[in-house]
Length: 182
Image 1 (cartoon, helix red, strand yellow):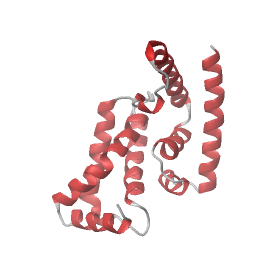
Image 2 (cartoon, rainbow, N blue to C red):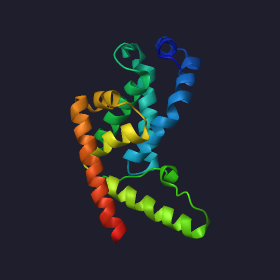
Image 3 (cartoon, rainbow, N blue to C red):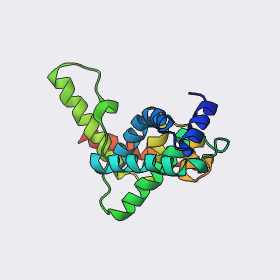
Image 4 (cartoon, one colour):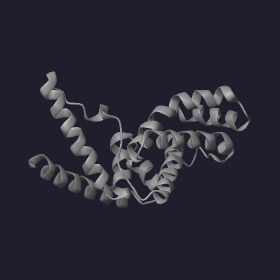
């Protein structure tokens, strides 16, 4: 959907149009849910974050500025801030997500076991990354946001984001080499 079309829908949401809200919900719920589920310790908490994100879209639609950011960036920013707030409330930070991103390409029981083992190694390695590195990696790699949009969400420069991503990738590579050798 074009940026202008989304902006028009957001204006309709600001005017109380439930149909426009439904369209935006259908467009953005899945990627926001995937992001929150990768960031938070359990699916229920992730669902709460997504629900709160859309409640804020409904209640704060008038504050959205389409010239400042794409709607997906604005919504991911809200979800990210809610996740960070959740981390601060909960000392346990664990990574969860669906396994679809880590499925193996082989077939049969052995391949499924290997894929599950690789998936668990990746999950553990991501969990051990500092929050900002994990967030940057998830926003760019899994959510498909541009470096510029991810930098805006994390409130850092693009250069700082690229540095975070480089450190995250180095850490992941090192952790995965150690885990996979064990």
